[in-house]
Amino acid sequence: MSFLHGRRSLLLLVCAFLLIGTSMFLVVPSESALSATVSSTATGGGSSSHERRFTPPASRETLQAAKPARQRYLTLNPGDVVDFAPGPVSFDGHPAILSRVGASWKFRAEVSGHTILNVGAGKAMRAVYVFVPPLPSRQVSRDDLDWYRTQFGTGIANCGPALVSMAILWAHGKDVPVQQIRTEIGYPYDDGATSFDDLKESLRRHGVAFKSPTLSEPQDLQDLLDRGHIAFVLIQSGGIEKVDGNPSTNLVGRYYSDDLGHYVLVKGYSLDKSYFVVYDPYPVDWDSNSLRYADEVTMIGKNRYYPAGELFEALRTKMILEVTSD
Image (cartoon, rainbow, N blue to C red; front, side, top):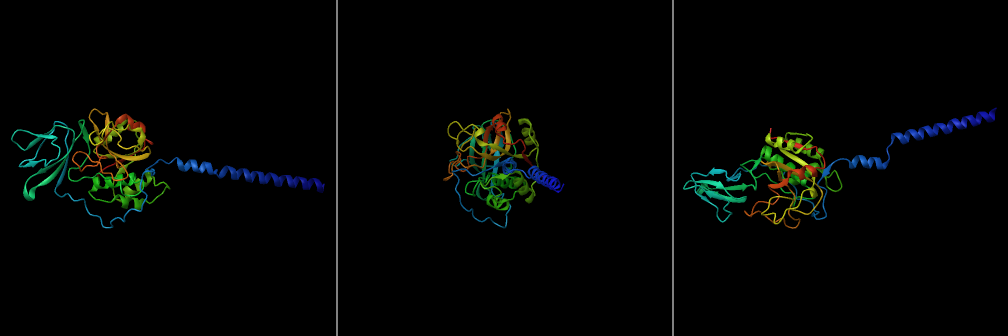
């Protein structure tokens, strides 16, 4: 009897250990399962092999409002007329993409491109930066400051922080350097990538209002722009076809070779709804980023036209950030 009792106790003990082991296996996920959970988070801006790896300069602690100064920034559709009275007006060697209307100081947009005009005389003179798009377009912008920012020279994988810097400048007129946004976010991922949650927290920190809608079709993005808002979207950049020819004269298409997860800012669309107008913070190259449009000032990432269908298909997630100026 004692022998049978001992065997029965041993069997019960073995069963207990098996049950505990099974429970632990069910409760604690495997290392591969944990990895799958982390990798499912959509991120953008992971560093490419071309980026310079360095410690960016310390950002300014005291922030200044962007200077309205003596500049003005205009976007004119082909055929639009603007009045610069009482003049005078000079192109001063920059592309004459506007034509004068009669003897007045009115000018009509004729040719697509970027140019700079000197308007007025003496202390009243101001520079007017003019963009004429290749197609009639609806765009969200500001005429008192240039709110485009590049990620070039700011550190590693800073497309997300560059978009936040642009949004703050657009919404509040405050110039917060890209490097400061990166310092605030830190490096949550080894490759420098940032998630939408990182960008949301940064916008909240700087008092910029936003929503997080999910797109179902390109029209949703156009409706957002019609409300006067701008959008952060995360794309696989290789999904945008490369530009045909020189990107300084052809604004349609991707102007760099890298194919990676990348944040761009959508700020307009062509009236025929075939293109979105994008502020892309990516540099032309990682050596000098020196290529400019014909005005010799404007960076190539500004006012790019990406085919609407390509951009929508290139989205790594249909969730976006809709940024408002409220």
